[in-house]
Amino acid sequence: MLVVRDASEADLPAILAIYNHAIETTTAVFTYTPHTMEMRREWFADKQARGYPVLVAEVNGVVAGFATYGPFRAWPAYRYSIEHSVYVAESSRRQGIGRRLMEVLLERARAQDFHVVIGGIVSENAPSLSLHEALGFEKVAHFKQVGYKFGQWLDLTFVQVLLDTPREPVEQ
View: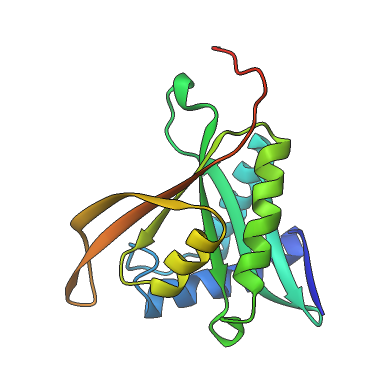
């Protein structure tokens, strides 16, 4: 059974394993060096302190994926825009887990009065691009050869979805 819930510190080893697998074996993360548990703890503490969700998807009690979001850019006028991340364990892909994580993440974004959700996806990742399109995201940018990993240049596609929130945006 698939359950999506807020992550706890006890989930960090599974989150770290999923993320490091993506670093080591895919082009989904534009970095070369696996993260440490201390890095994941700092990341998690920062998300909690800033009120950003970290969700995990469990299948039969085992963490099979995670998702989160954070600021798109630091300037105040971007306060209603966020950038998200979603990762699914290799053994659990193509089972609807990423979709369910994204659905809950979008619900959270609406509840927190965000207006734009942005994702940066390596352009060769057709399954992720298709998932985002099915959830209402549209392609808004294609950056050519902005990353280099595994001996190849990588393109990056930006996607976004507009939410119907907030009802009354303000400048602060």
